[in-house]
Image (tube, rainbow, N blue to C red; front, side, top):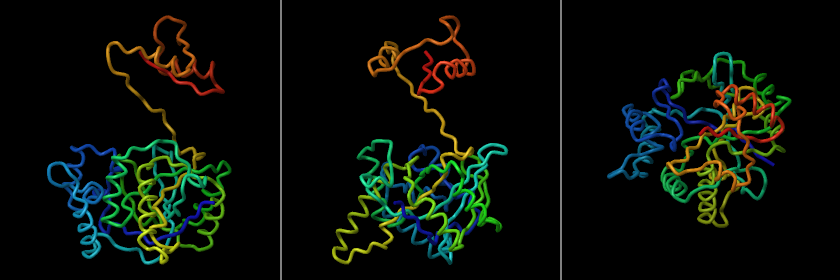
Length: 305
């Protein structure tokens, strides 16, 4: 069973838009340089710059400590869930919330992965976490709630003005709320307790936090505390069935003039069917319509050559 807890967030005291950053692993060096022009941007913590392209993890810890001391980050007075409303398109909204999630090994079936990870990024995030001893970025989880019970509970409890409003790094309008009602929090916790959570983004960071948790347990020995901060991870959770939660296709490029995608896909067991009746290549809309007519109840992909 998943276990969610309210928590006291550290939030930027000043206008957040210029201080937000995308997830660390999608930021190019040029974008990091642009973001870092703001002295209080998150990249000074998530991607601390060191000598010769290295990361200065200790510098991130010093920066975090200074920001807390100087009031750049303020600690909320009471534990809460933090609903977030994103207007992903005009009139289209994704509604999720931030909570502290108890870490669980994959074998427990509470948190489900769908990617394999690599040692380099895991090591990078572990070195950073050891220094800052904090969750700098939320992990993104989705849950299944076709009836919308969780969303209804969140909406009913969130009626006050938002804690913060701004546009994110991608230009999407964001509204952050605080949910402190013990009854509403318990209702959301109960509704999600028996539902598995799928990692939508953050596999490397989740496995990093499992490793960090185990290191902390080992150091604590018999004094290890099941309620310690290292037993939890910062999670953003959204309903996979919400119309505002879009799961988009990915794109892959096979390079090289000798590449034969049809042959490569055939070796993987795919059935290859040309679209457009062998004539002119159909446009995207035509291809999708034809695909839906042939494979409406099956998984299928379109390959453009």
